[in-house]
Amino acid sequence: MSDYGDAYREARERLCELMTSLSHEELEREVPTCPGWRTRDVLAHLVGIAVDTSDGNIEGAGSDEYTARQIAERKERSVTEMVAEWEERAPAFEQMLDTIHPAISGGIIGDLVTHEQDARGAVGRTGGRDGLAFDLALDSQVRFFGRRIKEAKLPTLEVRAGAKTWTAGKEEVSGSVEADAFELLRGLTGRRTHNQVRAFGWSVDPGPYLPIFSMYGLPGSDITE
Image (cartoon, rainbow, N blue to C red):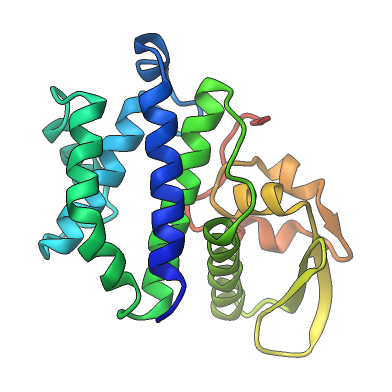
């Protein structure tokens, strides 16, 4: 058995605990890193991912329309009802994560951890910045970054976060970028601006890497969490 199912369960249970503790005002609060979303919409999307993926309903997955449908379908449901739906579907989904390609499982966990932090940022509840799910999410995002570096034919980077290092690219290392693990993950998932990413510890000109630093693009206004 791999760690993906356990990691997903860890983050899911933590997020459910957060969501059920929030007031109505907090649940209706706008999420700065997800324009147009309320805090409760984060939960609706993540429940929708588990349900749709389990049911094989993956056409258009990742598109704005796909995500909007997941949120709309749960618009009238309470947090308690959405948590119950997730808990019902989660065991089979978590088992599936241990059997499919690690890149897919890593991406799903990365999405969960990213949106957990989006919700936490909206309501000012720090947490979930370490542990198995966080580590797998960061590892997955750095590997995706390495793939983008290869596709863009840019020089290979050594990526560092604390004691952890990765090689992003396929050639001999030509430079490095270093950041706090949380800031690195938030940058790679499109939650930090060009200027914020430039402020990471680069040994080379970051300019060529900024357009591909995140697969989601980078926001126009600085985000502080």
